[in-house]
Length: 164
Image 1 (cartoon, rainbow, N blue to C red):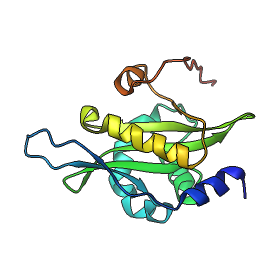
Image 2 (cartoon, rainbow, N blue to C red; image 1 turned 120 degrees about the horizontal axis):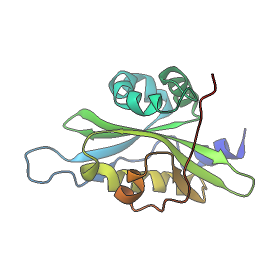
Image 3 (cartoon, one colour; image 1 turned 180 degrees about the vertical axis):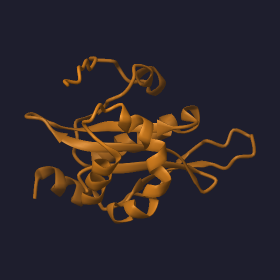
């Protein structure tokens, strides 16, 4: 068992839901951020796959919905879901990366609607999970706007060329 898997096992198979203050008086319910236990990923996948699809497609072949689902079911990736009024509103996929000097939690994909309602609480839930897994930090693979929206520092850019 890798150090990552041991840390994740010690952190627990699931955490309590994180309540996001998404009720802004518009009649909609509160948004709850869930870390989906590995064993329950298949039960929610049909609801979150369409939400994640646009973000996964930006991976230029590194990932697919199928490989992401397989990695989530095996516990190598984690699934966070923002739920409002009993419906998935947004989803994020994370993975612990073991760098030579430290482990970091990477947000590989994040997609959905209503970022102002759940974004800050969602990233706090992800950061809490990272701490529980013994990670030194969180990095996000995403467009530049994510840094400003979540209060993160843009430290680098990923440039790519798909080879044919």
